[in-house]
Image (cartoon, rainbow, N blue to C red; front, side):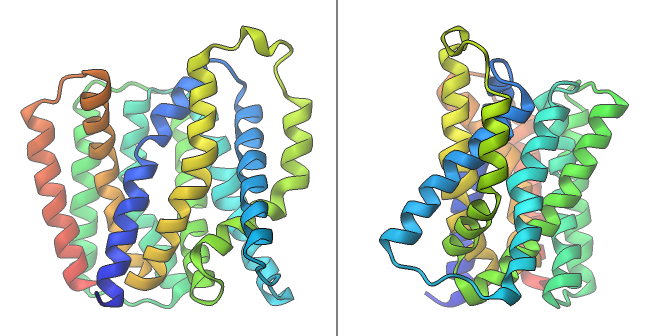
Length: 286
């Protein structure tokens, strides 16, 4: 298996794991405040990352890497989780998919700016069409929202795209799981204090579903998914592998159908097939 194929395989595993993030966040904010959810998930994941770093005796990153790690931390550890949690108080998880459909294009743009990549013109065509298909599908399913929620999602997507690209560049030197572990550890002091200050007054009143949502976003969305995702971006290219995010909403719908018995219509299958064509085209010209 060559590096590019391995990169796309790792990226696909990361996207499948991430596909449960927004539904899990939607459930978790029913029992926790957005600030507690953001800080607690980061603190829990940071402790797990610290255990990995110590167990495998990883060398600390150099001083020149600290600024880039701070960008990763601000983008994917703090910014995206907090802003999406705030946004989901004003919009539905279905509407958030409209903006997630723009994330691959945003990641590719930062891949050009931060990673020095130069995709071919046809790549941008496939990427744009794929994003429009995802956004159009979400809008066509009656997802309502507010200006405040929409603006929060735009800011979340911008920060996430930057964090993805910056982390991918670092992963080429430090390794994928090391990057997210160090970025989490960098934010641990702030996140631990924030979690303590914003903790619910009575944990007994928090429903089991909210705890399950917190567990998923802490372990899988915040750590395990990034192990595969950053490795995928580093091996397969930021712009190309980033287009796999276009499939994330459809994986989420499929999981909802399998686990929750929610209906999966033929329109979703048709749009997912068209999006898959766009992802394949983007890969060809990335």
